[in-house]
Length: 190
Image (tube, rainbow, N blue to C red; front, side, top):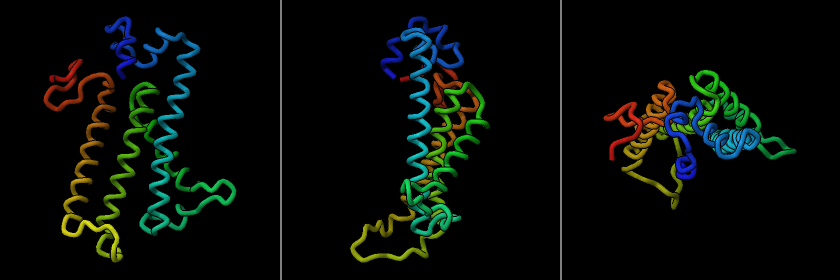
């Protein structure tokens, strides 16, 4: 972010651009490198989110703690990857990108931040739903009386993260402040 900010030649023009990151890269590196780096960024954002989320779904399914766990815990014998969990996350990511307003890069970045929050939130909700039926192992990590407060705090944190991410996506203001007390300004107050 610092390198991108320092590389801005014309702040008003870049701020008015539909995709400021792409505009900065085009100005500094030319159109060929811009496209090359945007493809790399796309794979990095979508790939990293997809791997983390599909791994989370696979882990919950392996432990029979996810809807359709029999399907989602299947691993391809040749590639040793959880194909159904990966396909599910890919489909959800594509749906998010289609449903979100804005330029393609903004959609990708927003989908890549919303998707893990949704997966994490669903993990917490599923945990809260089945926590009484889970077996306790002697010597295993246990929060004891803090189990429910920690789970509720995790759920509240997830909902706040989703609200902030979705609010930014709906407004389409990727470079503007998302502070509740200073919305829509070019920079947040210190």
